[in-house]
Length: 333
Ligand SMILES: Cc1cc2nc3c(=O)[nH]c(=O)nc-3n(C[C@H](O)[C@H](O)[C@H](O)COP(=O)(O)O)c2cc1C
Image 1 (spheres, helix red, strand yellow):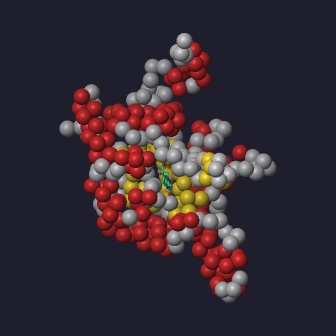
Image 2 (cartoon, protein in one colour):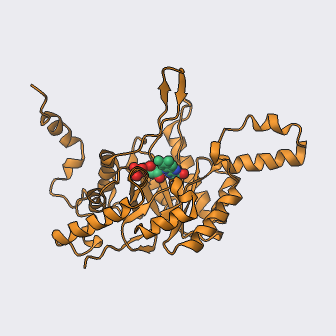
Image 3 (cartoon, rainbow, N blue to C red):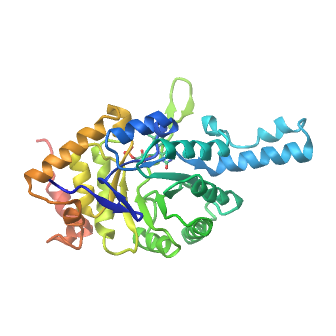
């Protein structure tokens, strides 16, 4: 019998496959189905800073201006689409999910700036979340803001959130930093208990018929694993934080690679949306079979075994390998 257990954010999990935030977690029965399919924990869809600010501005306008000026005022706020659910409803949903399943439930806050909205971290904890994931998703388009200012503001946000809660906090980030190890270290110094690498950026597309910019959500495939895989392999053993891999986890092999790079858990969304929740069961079966065939006894034994520190050729992760890779490419005659 192989031992699939792992520890993430101080939580003992029955295996390293976790559901990352997706529309599935909006329904209690879907979270139950994810638990039944074998996923070892679920990160709920996010409560957004914009939703919280929207709600408090709405209240403020009702209290101070009356309802007449409200429609005009609200039109200046960002359109949060179906995410304009009340934050109150989010914590209520989390409470219900907690009651319905026995796997750990991780709440998710999504924002960029420090401010009163972070008090919702505490509300998420009070609703029963086992941990919190803070998704910092920011698109800097102001040429006056430099990277250091931004990185300081990210660390300040992590500190603010940590002050609100006593549950562990993971930070989910994009890969778009000049010096990833430096930024990750500063976030861990600010209190992050885990880093979730990497968020997928949803890039807009153009509709050439309508001449409109269209939001275009493209699901991942296993090739998308490579980016987080490299960085987890390079960061493993260098930070006082757990590492979680998100993006491109579609197969048992993807989970194995993530763990071997050094991830405590691998997270999946696109695979479940593409193939259905039962995909998780297939991945976990495949993981067990592979480990038995290769005579691995536990996830702990595999963890970090292909990290930069462990492999015979650490340069394979770095620039040194760049020319070799390019010259090995066989172009069509
Ligand atoms: C439809 C959809 C909704 C998502 N909603 C959230 C969300 O609310 N919060 C969040 O942190 N990530 C969200 N994500 C990102 C996923 O949790 C995940 O990190 C990303 O899709 C990469 O993993 P994957 O390759 O397994 O899809 C969403 C992704 C999709 C496809």
